[in-house]
Amino acid sequence: MHRISALTFCCISFMVAAVRADEPTQVSDVMVREAVTRSLPFLEKEGVAWMNDHGCMSCHHVPFLLWTHRTAQIHGLPVDVKKLEAWDEWTRKDSLSHRNLFRLQNYDLGKVDPLNLPDAVKLKLAPLIERPFKTETEFLVQLTSVLTDDEMKSYQSIVLKTAERTPYNVDRAGGGLDVLGQLLIGNQGTDSVLAQSGFRDGVIELMNEIQLEDGSWTPGNQLATMRRWSLPTANQTTTIWAMLALSAYELPGSKSSAPIAKAIAYQRQQPSDPDNREWVATQLLFDRFFGSANEVALRYQQMLDARNSDGGWGWEAGAPSDAFTTGLAIYALAKTRENSDSAVVRDARAFLIASQNSDGSWLTPSRNITKTTDPERLKVRDEIYHYWGTAWAALGLMETLDKLGH
Image (tube, rainbow, N blue to C red):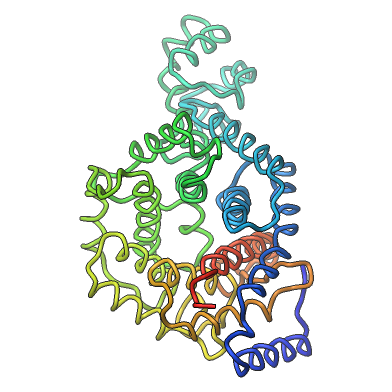
């Protein structure tokens, strides 16, 4: 991990001030394109490493690898199309492999009392450990091959309950709700295999299936465990992103499908959390699609008022500016309005351009955001937020291209 020294920080602060003091053209689209282009090799290197080392998409690496590169491609930045297509196909296969109704794990078996499931029976289940099964029939066929008839009568229901993946389980939900929504949003309008009906429709079906009765979606690790957030705020933000993903594939003029209508009704009953800047940015995107002009104007002004003096945003009131929140903020602002509040976006772009690392990445210290104080966990999360923040900085900067009138 890179560490910014006090001297470097002072230099960065001076650069931000200098850029902001100069003419607006100093923060040009050319500079933005150059900054994003520098970030792509880092996003590729670390994103592919995550694929190879962890063998999973995760909500903070692979979807953002694809989202940033697809967006860069749309804006004419240099992207290796063959590599991108290969990543898409890897992601498609990985998501499809995680749509399983049953999978036995040693961890789950360890939680079952031996009085309910004898150790001798657990040993017999060893050949089935970690094997995925998409249907109960498939699983029972294999179960009967390792247990006797008497054991099936006594323990079948316990084994089924232990092996069943819940609707929100990553192994059943195609990689998880956060992943599914990001794949829809990040590939909208592209020729990616992930945007084609064969894959896309299955994703939408999964998302609709795991929606709760009250219209919300339960947050996964992205918001529930990796942020220092309240559960109501995590629930709302997760629900908004799910709505945005589904509405991206609604027919023009139609945003009234049953799942979206239920989610809108849920969202309108929830309390505000204006001190959480990520919530405000996400709520602004919600108001843009589903709110009134007055609601959009109110939320837009909240975003402007939440800025720090350096032109960036921190995740909560009083928090220092970071690349993650600043990227998300200008993404939401630029999505909502074009050719307005140019000075605000220029200041944010200046903050990001001046604070970019030499390898093209942006640091986002996890200790400012996450719940944990454990040094080892912080080390892991620093790696995650380093990537995650870089992706959002790149996405936010690209969203501002051609929107400042120069």
